[in-house]
Length: 268
Ligand code: ADP
Ligand code: MG
Image (cartoon, helix red, strand yellow):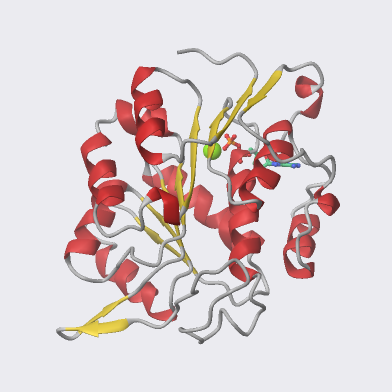
């Protein structure tokens, strides 16, 4: 596995939008803190892929993003790294226990739960929605890798009867970044274990596949209930294709001045 960089040398990249943040040529240009930078290096990433070159600065500037790129182009790090950097921006102590401080990007990083009818409700700062359990596991692994030796907490929620308790118990160490499939997340929200009012980052990974699998009503429910409005969050959508339904979702979920990025030929 890994990235075949040769394949990308001549690939067309289309970027559009108002005042699009300049692309980075190297990870060291991104302005990552030492912990994030070390984890990038430890992962063996020596240079960013085209989708990372554009997505990382866009999300670091808190611009919304619609990104169309094929599988294997490095989309996971493209959204995880800026999110981790932003959550870390308050410093390592801030994300440990403090629940009321505001980080330099102006939002509260909440780790401690509130208690409601004996239930602990946790409030992630970032939510990544994934169509399948396999993809969620992959994203969660990458998130753990990039937050190694930080106090940043990640959690994963996906369907299946046998792992429900385990997943809920895991929340007890707190959750900054939550990776979830839509159905299970709704269930867990309705049970009162997760609240989305502190969620400042929303990522829809493989959005086209989520729609193909019929998740649109669930996605709209998650985003429409209890999550900050689009003006109060940063939203990134990733998709291999850009058909009408994805365009409509982008119109509803992304701020009007979103950055559009297409790497390679994108079908509709
Ligand atoms: P996508 O989500 O676009 O399908 P992934 O994020 O899963 O792609 O990345 C595909 C593979 O390439 C993964 O094994 C990932 O760790 C690796 N990878 C991603 N970015 C880089 C990079 N900049 N340098 C080296 N390997 C990378
Ligand atoms: Mg992916």
